Image 1 (cartoon, rainbow, N blue to C red):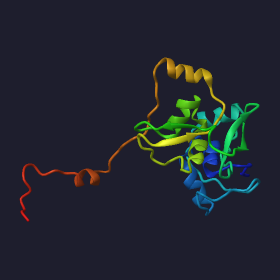
Image 2 (image 1 turned 45 degrees about the horizontal axis):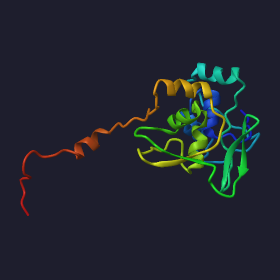
Image 3 (image 1 turned 90 degrees about the vertical axis):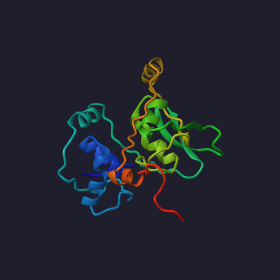
Image 4 (image 1 turned 60 degrees about the vertical axis):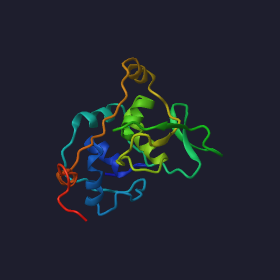
Length: 190
């Protein structure tokens, strides 16, 4: 397959497999780092992996080409101009909205909460100099880009008081073992 402008391994994974989960697999299959910059027209090989057909068909039917590898410089954010996100230089960040993350929220949740679509998760993460897979903590402040909103979806969530918080907090078994508390007094004295 040929890489399109501004595509990342995450974009390619979504485009061809219907999930961002295979981004690392695609990078490794091509002997590259997940953070490698891909060039427009670059040839990549795709591994044989399961495909989520419904998602792939959704993107194809709407002619959506995931390409979130927008290269921004300091003091640059995204604005909406004639319905598309384009880079624009700003002298300061006064035009950007700061939000507090709720417990168990992900970048996808923030994108849905503030824009009505999960499509902007990568842009929010990038603007805040984080990976889309970074674990966020309740109370953490992030900056949101200015992007097109899906008003109907936002009205739906608002009318039903839905605030997405889909992050999981699963502890590995060894962590639970380290948190064991002895009943009563500890048997040693110092």
